[in-house]
Length: 285
Image 1 (cartoon, one colour):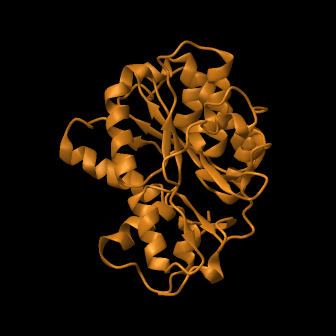
Image 2 (image 1 turned 180 degrees about the vertical axis):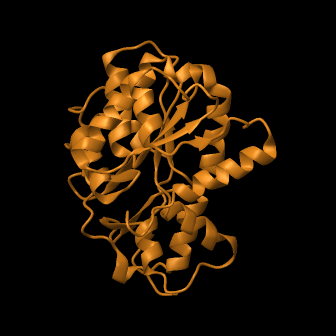
C-alpha cells in the first residue's frame, strides 16, 4: 500500500479557537465527519473537538476556545504524510477515530484524512477482519434514535449493537427535564445525522417528545427533499392508530418489525435487515 501524501485532505480546514460551535457543526456536516481538529494561531494542533462536545455546548455562538480543556489533553493520535495507508487505517479503527490529523515536518497541522478518504484511496481490501470493519464504518448511515424512555431496555440493546457494528448513533436523553438547551441539542443532533431511527410503540406514539422530534424530521424531509425517517415497531400500536403523525407513517413508510425482539433469533434477523437498509444504495449516495 502507498503513503498518505496523495490523499491528504488539505481542502478540509481545521477549526480555529475563534470559531463558533455553529460554524464547526457546519464543517462536520459538509465533510461528513464526526470530529474536527482544532489549531491555534500558529497552526499547532491543540484539540480534537467531537460531535458530542458541540452538541452539548451551551449554544451555537459558543467559541471553540471554551471547549478546549485547560489541562493538557491526552496524547492526540496524529500521522505525517509519509505514513503508510494501512497504518493510518489501523490507527483510525483501533482508536475509534473518524478524523486523523496529519502534521508536517515541523509539527504543524498540515491536513486531515478521514475513514471515508482512506477507504476511497485503497486499491485492494484491507487485510483480515479490518477490511470488513472499515467498510461497514464508511458505508452505513449515521443515526439519531428517537424513542420513549419507557422503551429504554430495547433502545440500549439496539444502541449497543449498532455501535458494535460501527454505526454512528445518538439518542436523546428523554429522562432529563425539558428545556431550551435540551431542545437545541436534539435539533442539532437530528440535523447532523443522516437518518432518524424512530422506535414506534404504544409508549412512543403517546409521547410528546417523540411527536416533536418526528415533526422536526418531517420538516427536514420537506426542506431537503430526501427521506430521513427510518421507523421500526416494537408492538402493534401503530396499526389503526388515530394519532395523526403516526397514521402518516403507517400509510407512507415501510416499518421494520422488532415486535419479537426478546427472542434472540428473531431479533438477529430483524437487526441484520436494519443494517442492510442502513447501507446507502447507489441511488442515494
